[in-house]
Image 1 (spheres, rainbow, N blue to C red):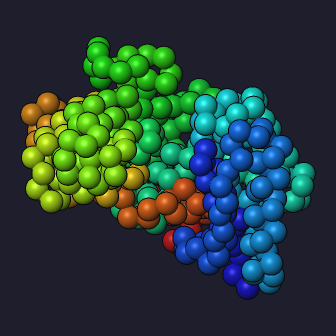
Image 2: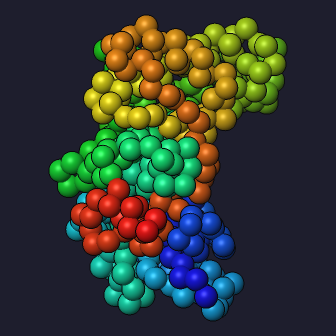
Length: 330
């Protein structure tokens, strides 16, 4: 049987597991709500349990190793999850060593946004490109950078925390404590918060009707904008402006071949893209204005297939991704 990797995408809300082939095809998949408040031992127990379910489903699978992506900050070389804000009680957890000892298999650990960037670069919207900046816009804003055949890690793997670059001096305070973070003004959460403030329960607005007179979410804003609601269209325009400012910064910093936008808000990409592009063209230096901004293709499988590819398509840690990719094609 073809070798596969066990892949896990550890999120603050959901834990997903899969068996993934070398070509990025997911052949089995399971998930469970993450016991995010129960500490690292409980969640690691969930990972082991999901692995068991996958192996029962595919008992003949030849497992090459385990690829795990998790929220940062984490150190991919040391295999340590440092202190993710969405997972209570995770402080310097040596996840790579724990799973390696339990399963007796090679294990690779990567930041979730980096793994998704890798998945899109290898198998999705960025396939064939030399360098990609992946931006996920959802509850927060995360990012990953593949540059010249390498995931750009920086010191201790902490690079590309793009959601926390400062793009304004005002607005709501970010969960990190700062004012003006990219994700504090442009995430899906921020869009929903802005919409909620502009409306009131029982006001008859389409946004409140869609939300059942509860808090308005980014999904409701996109749905109302598609229906032609003026207030929702104004919110989309403001959201696109902030995304365009952030993307302009990323173009100037990394000079990628393309920017790939994923996450829940990418479901409104067709509404946002022309306005984002207009902001980039108004703000970016001329040499950067022609870089494509495209929608992600892999959805919530990007992290899983990216994590699996760390096992199936790379050499030793530190090997150029481009080199590994070229060796694979021979």
